[in-house]
Amino acid sequence: MPPDQPSTSTPRSPLLTAAALSLGAAIALGLSRFSYGLLLPPMRDDLGWSYLLAGSMNTFNALGYFIGALCAPALLRRAGAWHLLMAGAVAASLVMLAAGCTTDATLLAVQRLAAGIASAVIFIAGGLLAARLGARHGNRAGLIIGLYYGGTGIGIALSALLVPAAMALARQQQAPHLWQWAWWAMAVVCLLATVIMARPVAAIDAAAPAPAGARPFAVRDLAFGLGSYCMFGVGYIGYMTFVVALLKQQGMQAGLITVFYALLGLAVVASSRIWARMLDRFRGGESLAILNALLGVVTILPALTSAAPVVFVSGLVFGGVFLSVVASTTALVRHNLPQAAWPAGISAFTTAFALGQIVGPSMIGWIADGPAGLERGLMASAGALLLAAVLGWRQPPLDSGAPNKKPNR
Image 1: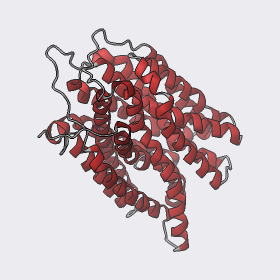
Image 2: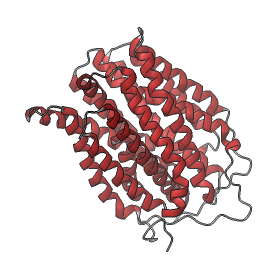
Image 3: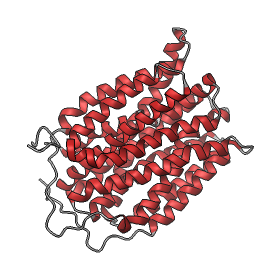
Image 4: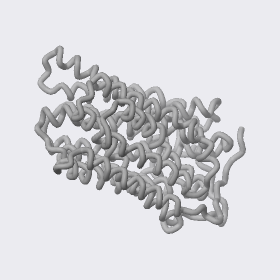
């Protein structure tokens, strides 16, 4: 029996299986990573952080993501995708529990580093399983991959509800640090999500052996795509880290901010269907270009005006687009490489993503600490995203794309 899954039974419903798998993305990004955007303002106020230090916490998280991406191919060979997904999900949950047990900036930075490692392991293992499931159901591959990454929106929406509710309960109990209760609440939800997804995801078949003469993965073949994804990492993380702090600074009421973040998360879930056909159609970097260009435009809107309708349009469009950029890289790998090269390809894109995220939060935080404030930081994020669009447009499909796709069953 292969190490990837304890079961090789055929999933009865690929969409339900993809929905279960999407809980991995909810843990890896929606709860473990993006919830920090909601927690940054109360943690900064409570602990007296500058924007540079607050942004650096996500830089440590991205450094962990980078380390996890580098280690993932070797871990996949040793443990297999399913076991790695489960181990990463449990680790991420425990690390979130630890975040609620200290106020020391150094220990919190270590926590964000460890959370990043776990997130990368989950995301790569889950992305590989989504690609394998999509290969079995080729006419729905784009939707299946999009459903997996759209699970991040479930995590974002849950965090938008959990964080204020947990902090309100902590306030009633006169807890000294309200934000700690939010970390504990999200850790419990992550453990529950891990239990829910374990059995359905175990039914995804193992990878097929590579056919003789299949194209191996080479960085130079997808260099423009990798560069585009790196700049996406720089740009999008500035928005997700600081947009809530900007809205609070602009005077938006707490209830409206909760609605804004929840709607952003729900838009992520909806994005799996919106962009599925495009992910199936384009074999090159066209999807990367189109999606990053849209993100660049809407990222700059909150920096130009605090008008609630415009801000909500920004959040809805951003949520409806940004995780589809991630899905587009998995589709790019699936279209152009054989299954045996998918782990290396997905890991390479995740590594490029992590490099961008290492630079992004600290750079945007440094800009935000200057006289121009958070508005200028979002403008810099928009510039990075537009550059990502240009690079994505330069990525051609490979001449000998090698998706050894299995027929629908």
